Image: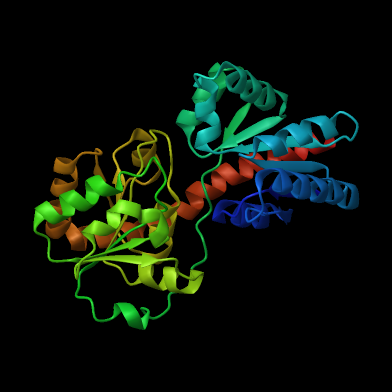
Length: 325
């Protein structure tokens, strides 16, 4: 099956899943350019990839909506199975208050031969909108466990790492405040670019460390040498990348308490509703159950691959059958 995975962003899911399918990874990230220049350059390179590779199956990450519009137009004169890997923000746009956006996203997803999402709740939501959907969680990333970066060695243990990009759905300030009120003696590392932390930098102290941008090697070493990872979101059906990373490195994680998280990450995990009191309770629970949680996340390492391979095999078969139709 000759396939092409297209994305106009840099995200681990795209790279891991394109490799699993054996598809060419069409990674066209020009985010450093202005919007119009980015769309123009990415669009031209997308057309070139389609012309050169002549794929039977094209999987496109959405967002970008512009990428999906382009592929719908191209599919009208070039035959291929069109699949959308829809991230949560795209699915949420089906109920947007912006009527034009809502109708556009529904049209694009219905035009796709198949829409891939990360969990069963999103499959159900899409199907109620007349959209053909299938579930495929992220593949566990391959992470090299290196030595803790030297500049972090002086901070005391235990080490907690709050995985952050400072997006609007991340309740970072609420967690920091709860961490301070808990009186926990851990070191709390907060990832992501300092310039995006803005007023949150007022919390910086000997115990709360804003790491700034980290190389992939340093980031992976930091999370692998943590005692607890934290990755929170207010999106109800979002499976955060940090959860998959936690399983890969064998470190317990604290996640927002949602049915989607409980379905996919049932053990080795702490859950908290997005309130200060719940965060404080979860930190107290970690202190009491750290050994049990460590054993649980290692068990998840063993169990996740067969779970993922079942979903992957079913989806790959569907794509093979569609490409031969």
